[in-house]
Image (tube, rainbow over all chains, first blue to last red; front, side):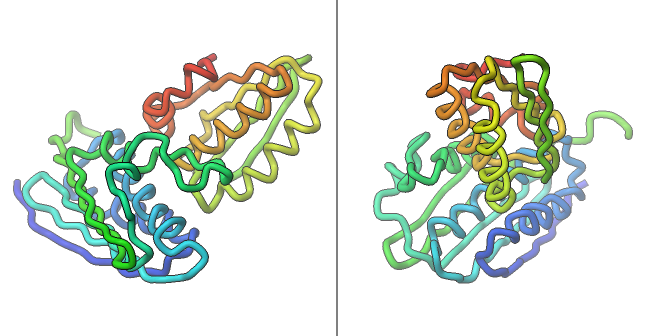
Length: 146
Length: 102
C-alpha cells in the first residue's frame, strides 16, 4: 500500500527538544511499519541532525529549527533546517570524528551517523545562512506479525 | 536518564538507563566522572548499556571522554549490553576497539 503524507514541525533550538523532535518523526514513520532497527536508525539520525542545529548552528543563542518529513510510497524524506551560523567547509565538517569543539567531548560523528543510518544525506550550508540537512530512508515491509 | 553503579571487588559497573542524548548527557557528564574519581583504585570499569533505550553520537563523545580518563589512571574500560538502541552507534564509532565488549 502506498501512502503519501507529510508533516512540518517548528521548535526552539533548546536541548530538551531533541527527544521531542526524534519522537515526532518516529511516530510519523510508524505508518510505514518500520522494524525496530529502522525506527532506531531514523530517530538517531534525526536526533543528531537536530543536535547539530542546537549546538553548532545556534550555539549560545536560541533560534528556530524546522523539521519536515514526507512519506512517498515506502520512503521517508526528512529535512532539518536552521538559520544558524552555517558551515564554512562542508567536506571537512562531514569527516568522521571532526569537531570544532574537541574540548567539549564531542565525538564528531553526527554526520557519519546520518550517512550510515539513512539511505542518502545531502547538506546545504553557507556561512551566515544556516544549514539544511536532507535525508531519506526506504522502509521495508513488516517482516512478521506482531 | 538514570545512572546506577555497583562494585564487585576491584571492578565497577556503571549502568546507564533511559535515553542518552545531548540533553541528558549534561547529567551523565557530572555523575559518571564523580563515580570514576571515587573509584580510581579499581582495575576495570564496565559501562552497561543494556538499559539504554536511545543513544546518538553524544553518547560516543561521553564514552570516549570517560575512556581517556580511565586510561590515564591505568583502568581498563569495557562495554556491555549495547542492543538495538546503542549497539549500532557503538559499532560505527569503533568503540569496541578501545573498550572491548564484555
